[in-house]
Length: 283
Image (cartoon, rainbow, N blue to C red; front, side, top):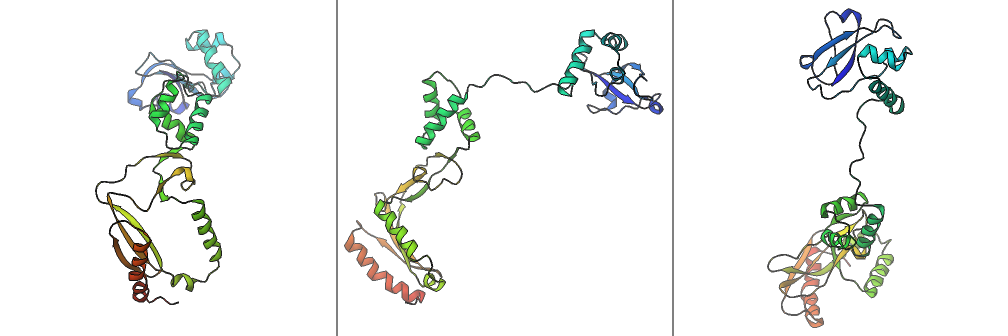
């Protein structure tokens, strides 16, 4: 690779050149050519790197070009073809550099239309897998790797996330919860410190629930389409009832058999009042 390096006159005899590409020991000097035209007291030397098959000239502030000389004079002075000199100067004028410009590379298969199709599919069904999306694109003769699909969705703000597990609520449940929240919105801290919160949950005996992912954007974790609904009762597990207050947890009870109204009332009768006494809650 050929480069032009600037040296000052006092360093000319010792050939003290600072290069931005590699240390001085790896350079082989082909010729030394002083140019005084345009910038007095500044010299340039032509340096051949160890790989002479690559030809590139640094022409930033090239004195011989700044002095107004034509392509023919520059070509003769540097010993380079006129077309090479013309190409270098044209590139400098147009781009402000003679470095290799970024190349476009192979055109992407993920055209804007294909990307819109992907986004529409995962917006409609966030649980769609990248393999299913890959098959969907293959049906319209677009062959891409599933990792490419994940990367493209990520660039559009859609990332694979484990869905949050939230209770399956009916419209009636949602309305009742919202009403309760509004009713007690301005209650003092003392009210909450003396409130007992009961709940029951299911614990699996063996293994774990199968995990899956949803495609979603930030701050959309609790949207209905992005959660996994849970139900209170199911087989292959143990149901437990518990309660807690602001200070500490209360009693815990194992639910044997099927939960129904009678069983639930029995649990409340045997555990709520004792928990209130144990936690010293006030009315």
